[in-house]
Image (tube, helix red, strand yellow):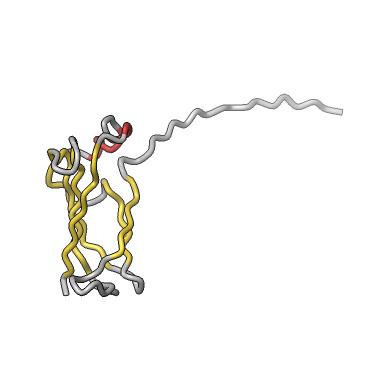
Length: 108
């Protein structure tokens, strides 16, 4: 019986979480009706220092609502107008010291 020598190669792969986090919202109009199957603009602002704090990151998205008026997007994957996506990995976001504010506008 022959013996075979097995050589194992171990590869170490490092992966890093993307600079994004998921966000979902239900969009309603001023009459409190769902905005369904429409494209809406969503502006995401991350504020440091509370509700009236300073924006440290701002981005915008154009997304389509579904039949339930819901939009899904990734913060960190929009058109950035202020700040950097790498902010999502660092403090103060990880320590809960920020506010995420969204503003929506229906294009209907």
